[in-house]
Each structure stands twice: as structure tokens, then as C-alpha cells.
Image 1 (cartoon, helix red, strand yellow):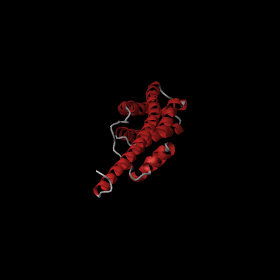
Image 2 (cartoon, helix red, strand yellow; image 1 turned 180 degrees about the vertical axis):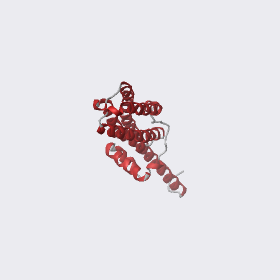
Image 3 (cartoon, rainbow, N blue to C red; image 1 turned 90 degrees about the vertical axis):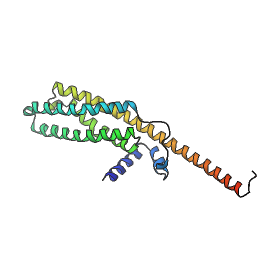
Image 4 (cartoon, helix red, strand yellow; image 1 turned 30 degrees about the vertical axis):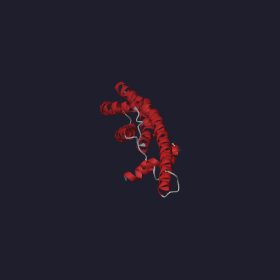
Length: 201
């Protein structure tokens, strides 16, 4: 199940970020050293950190507000609101986990999964809670949804930039590794030729 999810995320990553295919298709991709440059993004990590602490407060506030306005809501909107909160709570946990793992460990598929969940699910659902007046939005609810929308929007923009930078950095490391391997092979060839006497000492 996890391998199938990772393969699906990798497929989407290569579609959205074509340069990632260059390094992932090569069998020596996983042998590339990490090097000295750290690509993990501090603003994104800070946003994820504060978002992780804010999310339980946001969810609790929304549930309290839902109970307060439940009797006044239309039956259709009762179902829609509950479904949105359940979906957002599940997506938020998965999204923050993938964001942490992808950013700190510099893993492109995990970070791409985080970005896709943020852009495709969390951002539209947050905007729906924020802008749909048919849900009888209460002032406290609007306040926490504005903060959540700021987090989600910033993470969607920053996540794209980080993925792009990570892919470029991994591609450059791949090319450097190939160049180092070529030099190493030439040196080994020269040494072996010296040993059998084809080249003067």
C-alpha cells in the first residue's frame, strides 16, 4: 500500500516537475551522496511547525462553532460541513507528516505529496469554509479559518519553490557524481596501464 502510494506520488512529481525524471530513472540515483548543501527550507519548516500546533486549536474551535450553529443549518449543509471537517482533519495529519518528512529529509516524493494535498484538497476546502456564507460562518470560525488559509496558501507557494529547488540540486549532484565517476575510472585506467608497463613512470 505504501509502495503504491509512493509510486503514484512519484508519477505525479515527474509530471509536474519533469527534471526529476532525469535523476530518478538512473539506477545510480540512490547512490548519490548528500553533499554539504542543505536544501531543507526554514520558512516552510517554521510554517509547518506552527501549523502543527495551530491545527488542533482550529479543529476544536470549528467543532464548537458547528455545535453552536447546528440547529440553524440546513440539513444539506449539516452533512457537507461535517464531511468537510472530517476530510480536512485526516488530510491535515497526513499533509503535515509528509511536509515534515519531505522537507527535513529532503525527499521529493513526500514533499510532492504534501504539496498536492495542500493545493488540491486543503486549500479549496479551507476557502469553502471561509467564503461560503450559506454555512452561517460565525466570527470566531472566520478568524481561525483566515489563519488556516494563510498557512495553507503560504505552504502551497513555498512547497512548490522547495520542490523545484530540491530537484535542481539533486540533478546537479547527479551530474557531479557522474563527472567524479568518469575521473575515477580514468585514474584507475592510467594506474592499471602503468602497472603493466604501457606507460612510463
